[in-house]
Length: 175
Ligand SMILES: [Cu+2]
Image 1 (cartoon, rainbow, N blue to C red):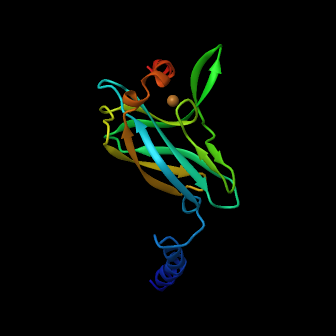
Image 2 (cartoon, rainbow, N blue to C red):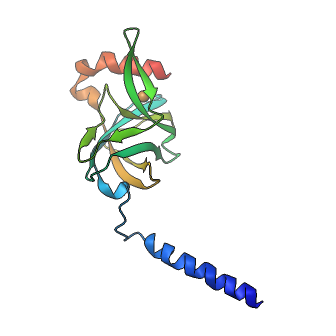
Image 3 (cartoon, helix red, strand yellow):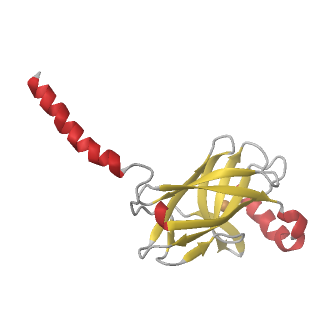
């Protein structure tokens, strides 16, 4: 029994400092603590759409490169979330997953925008409706994460012509 008590004390003495380091108020230099995410928005979708896309700007305020590895949303929004980039393949626009993640170089910003890098929402549970919003969680290479609110905007109303061809093609590639 004495051995067990000593073991317990040993374990506790290891756990207590760790517990303090992981409190939410910690100023730990995690990647998530060193990014500023802004302008997060998603395209409103058609009623039966199975895919959607979200865009945002990530500013890396640290002096080291930061890698955005993946993202997730609640299962009530979409079943799969991937980071995609857009490439030309045989004169066609195609989307590919950035399986290694997206690097945000030190002390700079990267903007995800239509026609370029985007957060792909697959297996939409329902349409993304204008003015609604949802939480998007971004995961970085050090396993830290950051939650941002994504606002749904309807671009079809404002920029019908500019987007029509490209977005149609991008949607087709995913269906
Ligand atoms: Cu995509």
